[in-house]
Image (cartoon, rainbow, N blue to C red; front, side, top):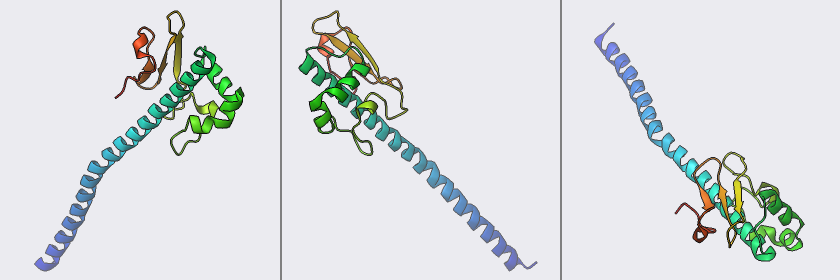
Length: 154
């Protein structure tokens, strides 16, 4: 084997190794960033959905002078109240790709788990706590009336 042939073979092998290592480096930078961006988008979806539930709770409280006993009561009210049936999609908009549906309102877009809702009707005014079962995100408080309808995220 001539030295020129051997050098071409070695150069070809090294070029392939360089291309493979460049791709591995690129992928190791881009993949984690894409994963973080997807997580942020899902977190935004969940927080928006929780805000929509809060808006529905506030609307229920405003019209009925009380918060619903459970999220099922809220969904039932949204499905049976004539004005909520007619104007629900404009009052409680979902972020795309989701569309307003009272039945899916109380479920997290992240995993499909149901939001946790607890009503404290021993205080005046009544207060509630709405929690995402998959994270520490919450709206309201069970002890402090000044946190009524307040989110725990910025």
